[in-house]
Amino acid sequence: METMTFRAMLSVTLVALAAACGSKPGGTPKTAESASGAIATEGVGQKTSSAGDTMAGKLPANHMGRIPVLEYHVIGGEKNALYTRTVASFKADLEDVYKRGYRPITIAQMLDKNFADVPDGMSPVIFVFDDASPEQFSYIQGADGKLTIDPNSGVGIWEDFMKTHPGWKNRGTFCLLNGAAAGHNFFGDNPKFHGQKKEWRFQKVKWLADQGFELCDHTVWHARLDKFSDAVVQEQIARNMMAIDSVVPGYKVRTFALPYGIWPKNRQLAWQGTWTDPKTGQAHPYKFDAVLEVSGGPTRSPYDPQFDPHSIKRVEAIADDIHKVLDGLDKNKTRFVK
Ligand SMILES: [Zn+2]
Image (cartoon, rainbow, N blue to C red; front, side, top):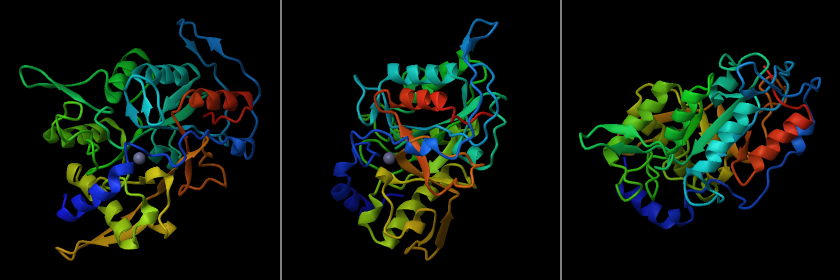
């Protein structure tokens, strides 16, 4: 997949990537939108279930409420940073949303208004993992050659959490890169990046799809799309989709995440376009149902007439922003409840 052309472009352009998705470092999420468009629910407090687990009580339905779409990059590191969430903080985030009565779904499920994985009286949450870093999904190879999921990688933490938290499922959205620097290539392409081997990449991506996670396009190497021609924009997007298709043949990619949250000059190319391979003359069209922004607070409900699937807002996992946003949704009774 990687031509010399792409490698050359990568070397001059990727200096600023550094696993980054955000365009405004240090910014705080906007919550102004959350005051409008929602139907207030009656106040219902938290309660403790008979099983002893702390969990949200059954809330009245609010299909016009907001849905938090949480945005993660690297899971790991010594301390939290703009694009790094420590293992401890990620685990705490999972516990927080679980106790508040949220259950995970994918962007595709939200688009389809498919809340089958969310019990009545509870709320959907969407975890989105950007940039396909090895820290999100690592294998450990045993002496016998057998691969197991690293329990300290994002997916490993998720799997352990699922075992101990009834009702938690493998639902979430991975926005992938397939040719970026520093191992951001389907979760690691060289042992120098978190010990991950190139030949493990496809197995990881296929596993995610098989489990019920959603695969999302995030360009080949995280190009800042406003800096490039329409042709390069479409090549970046189409070739990422084709790479996903080469792992899971026939997979319908429905969601695209804007690198850095930056739109191409020709905005529509973010969700629809065509790249014609100059070598084969073959056209590779793409058409997505959803485009993910980088920030903006909890997103509108798909039942809300103002819901715009081509501009889905997200909440970045920075400091305690997620906690604050969830507090705000409860305080203002603006949370989507099935
Ligand atoms: Zn990104």
